[in-house]
Length: 37
Image 1 (spheres, helix red, strand yellow):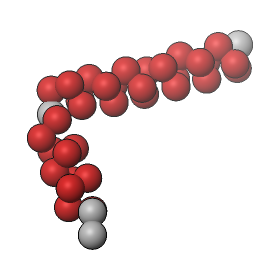
Image 2 (cartoon, helix red, strand yellow; image 1 turned 90 degrees about the vertical axis):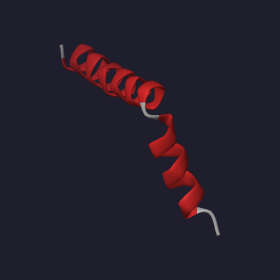
Image 3 (cartoon, helix red, strand yellow; image 1 turned 135 degrees about the vertical axis):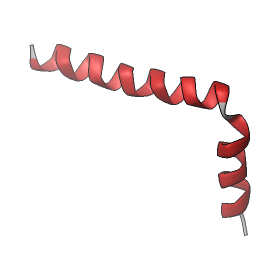
């Protein structure tokens, strides 16, 4: 059960990351651009 919980936890995190990236690409790209020297 522990491995199954970790599996869904990681996939849920990845899904939320892709979801936010899909609807807020400007904010993420802006952060990456600002971090560049």
